[in-house]
Each structure stands twice: as C-alpha cells, then as structure tokens.
Length: 107
Image 1 (cartoon, one colour):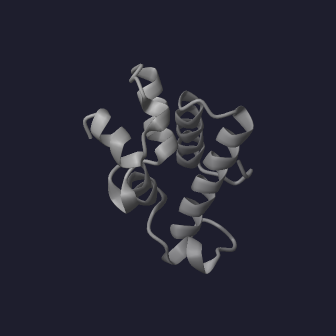
Image 2 (spheres, rainbow, N blue to C red; image 1 turned 135 degrees about the vertical axis):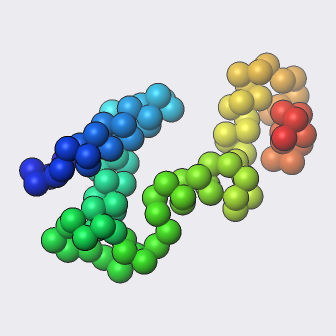
C-alpha cells in the first residue's frame, strides 16, 4: 500500500487480499488484485494524485466483480463450473459443455 493510505484503505486492502487468498490464488496474485482494487477506489474518490479516465468513469470494482462472478455476462466460466463438478464428483463432466455442466450442477 502507498505510504499516504488511510486506515480505511489499509483495512480494505487486507480484506481483499484475504478474500483472494481464500479463493486459492497465490500471495503475489492476491497482493496485486488488492492493490489494483484499492488504487482504483482511491482514484474514484479523489484520494490519488493521478487517475486514469477508466479509473474514474468505469463501474465500481465491487459491482464489476459481482457481475463477472455470478449470472451477469454469461455467468460463471466453464472452468469454474468444471471445478465445482469435480468437487461434487459428477460423472461424465469431462465430456460436458458449459450448458451441460450448468444443468448437472442444477444452475
């Protein structure tokens, strides 16, 4: 985190980092995602010295992530569905396409 970060942004960074680690990502990936998200939020709220146009005019990070992780823009990816099917031990999953995996998982 940048030195001039507020305690709120520090907490936000740690929370995002922990969430990404719980998803199974590496420490480096978790730190990068947390830093990018917090930096974007700082830019959106005028707390950063410089900000790109996409940082200030795009939808919020929380909203964007929510759209991509659930039903928006096609729902979950094939890999996400396949991994859930593997964890549930669904037979024949390797021959299924995305729609068939969704049906098998009851989605």
